[in-house]
Length: 116
Image (cartoon, rainbow, N blue to C red; front, side, top):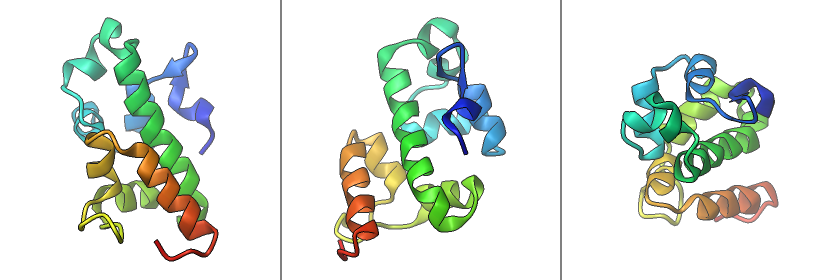
């Protein structure tokens, strides 16, 4: 899915993300490790922390979507599939703990044929 589908007025829009992934704003907030206010109040949506976490999730989903064939299946993977080498943590759990870069490196390694 293109980044434009997740963005509005030049920033990531939690409402659009929730709609595209057929989930709720509360779930989007939990999925990226933010409180409900971070995706409900305009001033918090625009904050660098909120935008960073939303960008990280969208970037990961966009990176794995071609592998799974849809954003919904990529989102299910993000939330539930334990990643090898990370002690059974999922991509979602790693993003929530501030390790999105590690998830992206893992995806790159798998795409390059290196078993991570």
